[in-house]
Length: 216
Image (tube, rainbow, N blue to C red; front, side):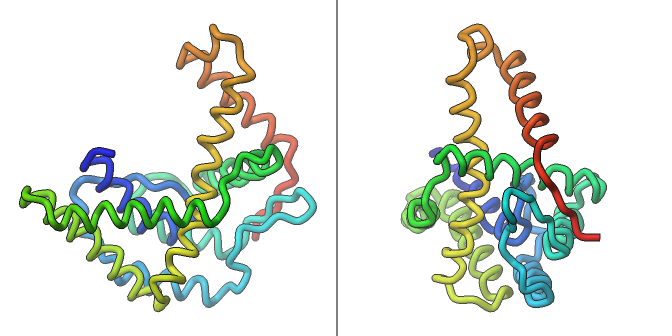
């Protein structure tokens, strides 16, 4: 993993726990208050005890907590997406996860947690780099994570446990895509445009068949 990718992954790890969705990371991130984000996230979680992604006999349930966290993402990153667009995308992510889980493609929580810890270890190694820019980048990322954890009011162990579940949710999409690719003809699998179109049609079908309940 190159250093630029490592930086992006770290920021995503910080944000993904708070927002429950994959995030877009901008290079100029100094404007972000991760401690404040942690505090706001903790307040949302405290106000809604149904903090886990929910399914009930195949039904996808989007809670008020989910919606409030989406609003945090929109405000924190200044995203142009409207609320309904973000809810629709979250529904797709939940449906993809459920399908991947049915096919036994989702990694365990222990594996997901270890991946996150391995990335953290890479950052700690970068603190010893001879390159001043690399050291500064690693320190900044660790400062972001520590500020976010402090704002959340949880221990590091609790944070990594929570982050592991979010990583499972996100990695499920890649796993299902790889599985789906094996079911396609060589012509479709080897052509990005054809594959992307086939994938979107496949996910559209999963969403159409799913039972979805969104908090009002």
